[in-house]
Length: 155
Image (cartoon, rainbow, N blue to C red):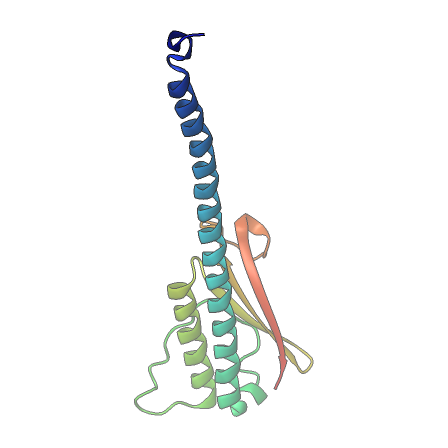
């Protein structure tokens, strides 16, 4: 066997190596994309937890409003009562809290919305957002890709 029978063999080895390496790099790229998506989802969940506890803190700061039922069944963004500079009643403060909380929700979470409901002595704070940016909206947590975080507290 002479040298002529081995011509082009190294080139085939190099081409096979490039194909195998390319498949491996595509797999790594897919892992990186998946990791970034999961990292962003975890960040959104962290923001939702922060916003849920933000409402709990607002309610604890206005116990007169809580006792009067001003935080019962909050949903949507109410009008700003415009009383911060002049002094708010507990009812106005609850309305301002709902206004500011849902405004923050809309700014920090994609399609972010929050609700507060009460059953007995337990307040349920629910934060909803479009985790996969599919444009989902609605009231149900499973509708259109919405994710929900619910927090039950007794004040």
